[in-house]
Image 1 (spheres, rainbow, N blue to C red):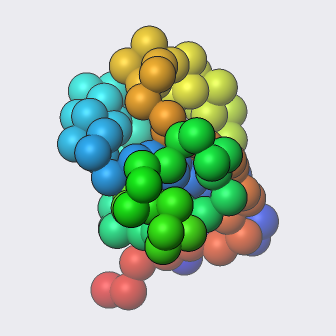
Image 2: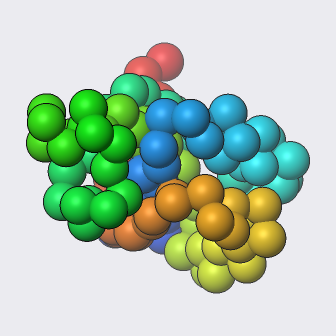
Image 3: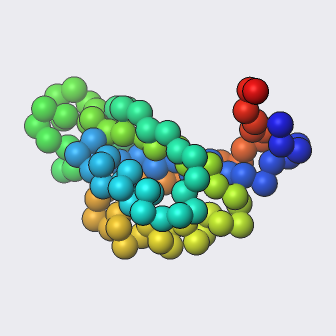
Length: 105
C-alpha cells in the first residue's frame, strides 16, 4: 500500500460514447497514462443543442467515463499530450486526489 497521502491523482475523462475508442487509443499512445479503466455512462447537463432528438427526450446522452491514475506532477504533461488527440471530441475532464491506493496481493 502506498504511503498516505498518495502523490497520485485520478484524471476523469467524460466523452460521448462514439468517441470512447479515440480516447482509449490516445491514452494507449501516450506512455504516461499508466493504469486506467473505462465504463459506459450517461451524460447529463449538456446544452440543448448538443443533444440528439432522442437524447433530448430521455434527458441524457450515451457517454463513457475513463479514469486514469497518474502522478500529480505528470498530470499537466498528460493533458498537454492528450489535447491534440481529443480536440473537438466533446471530451471533458477533471482531476481528483487519490488518498490511498494499493494492490491486494
